[in-house]
Image 1 (cartoon, rainbow, N blue to C red):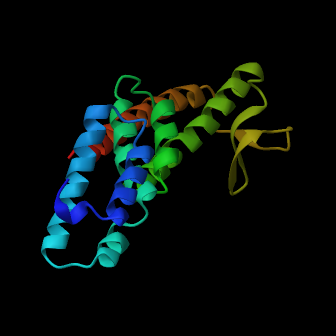
Image 2: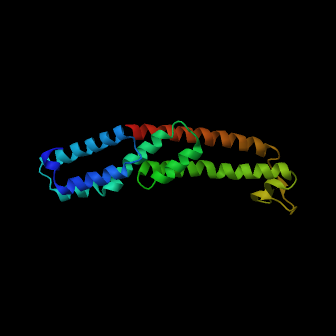
Image 3: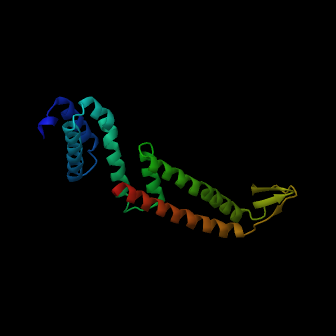
Length: 185
């Protein structure tokens, strides 16, 4: 450790970071800590006071959380499923703007798809009452109790649902790939 980092402030800061990085493999954890030490040393050499450096880094646990998020996202590769990626995005969305945007994208893709899947199951169970209905100038999707509305889609509802599911799945994969690229650089 450099002489500049021997103060108790930095020992304490790095110890908290080390503790927060416990889930990360030891070699990667040491690389992160060494990079942080180097960053702090450079700032000290430029004459920045300890308080300014601490303010710029922030809380050591939150600073470490940024690295944990990147580690979590990159370790989701083997699962490579929207469910696992959504779990990771939920945990990291609060720390990273891009992860938060990706989370919103996942919700925007999957919410209507899941709704269409529900309607498709209901369509199979009760084909005469479930669908996309037109009554006068209004359209609505759901269960019709025979209020004079005419069904518009028929069994095409299932085809459209299949297309939406594939599109949401592929969109999730593309988002996951983009997120991994952003966190691994």
